Length: 357
Image 1 (cartoon, rainbow, N blue to C red):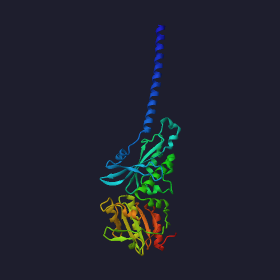
Image 2 (cartoon, rainbow, N blue to C red):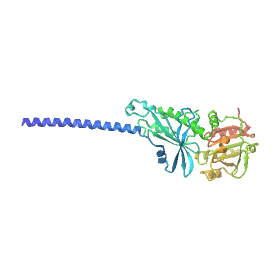
Image 3 (cartoon, one colour):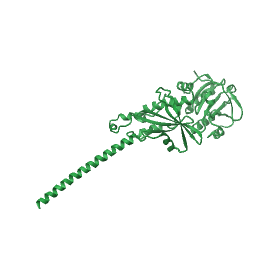
Image 4 (cartoon, one colour):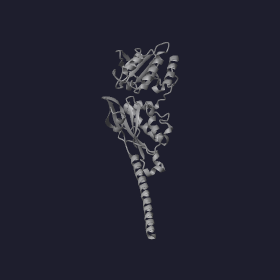
């Protein structure tokens, strides 16, 4: 009886030891599986075409030759043009920057990629519509501030990414703010130069963009036909102060800025102003008819779907405003995001016809 009892106790001990080994092995297996899964998750990437189609299946991407890097790395940026129903809607570019988070010790076992790749979608008004994280697709080890970086770029104009008077991104982005800001700033320089010209880029970088900006340069010579069939040129503008605007009508914020600036100028008492609106679209373009109806027949509207006139007068952005005096001398130029500056300039020119040097 005693012998059988000892055998049962030995069997129980062996069973318990085996059970512990099984539990430990299962735990180690789960840890190993979780570790491998985290590594895989960290290294998952996203294809730019798939990313765009997930956002809007109606958009068509066409691969274009890489965008030339104007800053100096020489690698170029992968470039895709975006179309919807056969109409040009903008461009998508890829760019890469260093992943500062890869230096975190607790992420070393996950072999976190040392670089991050984003894709940014600039619409036909040169405004950021969306930003995707292509690599890593799922930002393992990156906190909620990473999403804030992506979201903070939406709605930002390309020209504002080029100028660096203020930080491009909010400091809420944490350790990735500086490398991401520098990378997209360099991309924006190349994008702006490709859509406009080197002269435009240099002018933008040098531009002060304050309400007291007094360029005192003659407005470029041009000649165009308005939607009413009237011929208009630089000489015709002389004799009255002029508000000259370029805008993409499909851009909601651009639409509002144009209407507000036109209403402000039209409400001035005394000698009436010339108001010229160059619309970067055809007569049937998205928003064209609505914008022309809203500003009224007193505004000289010129259709410029290819931005030929916009480039000719060095105003290819949307919206962009220039204030000219009665001799067609440029006294103020600035973007539509600076309406308070524009209005201050208009008031000063209306009062005494000049801005200080």
